Image (tube, one colour):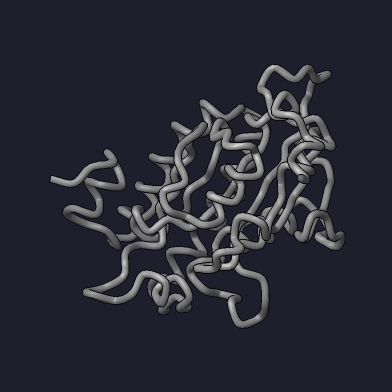
Length: 238
């Protein structure tokens, strides 16, 4: 079994590095042209936007994923597109970021995963130091290949909920309408800035700034009100 080559201690947060330590950024989504621009692929879009902003070429293949590496803020950054085919039973075996993290001796708190999230209003970002998979197949795969360990940070990119009784899978595989696309484009730029903050200020301070910056941006454009705005700010609905 592949996992036996990477003992659980390889994913321990106590791994010793000379400072500054590298980061691995992982964007989740579906590979293939037909999925480009869909809601499920905002993780891909953010990793691509960040890589371009830092001059990192995503031109290598590693563990069934597109991979690139470079320097940002004098910190080594590894970027990876993680393939997570929506709705397939083989999801848990499609994407392996564990071997890459183990190869570079990265502790889990230096592996930041970006993914779409229906539980957040469209265009809202949230940065968390750890958490569950929330029924997201890509996160399930990441957790599986980290031997069940969930102690890695993730950047949630809000895409909103499907209207009415629409099938969530169909919603995820649709492209954004013009208004939602505008929110997502703004969120991607904010996400690039947020990742730069993570590299320069660390995860904890960045998490506080990202949440409020995201809400203020959308509120300033008048594109969110009532329950959606309250949820984006406080994480709960009235």
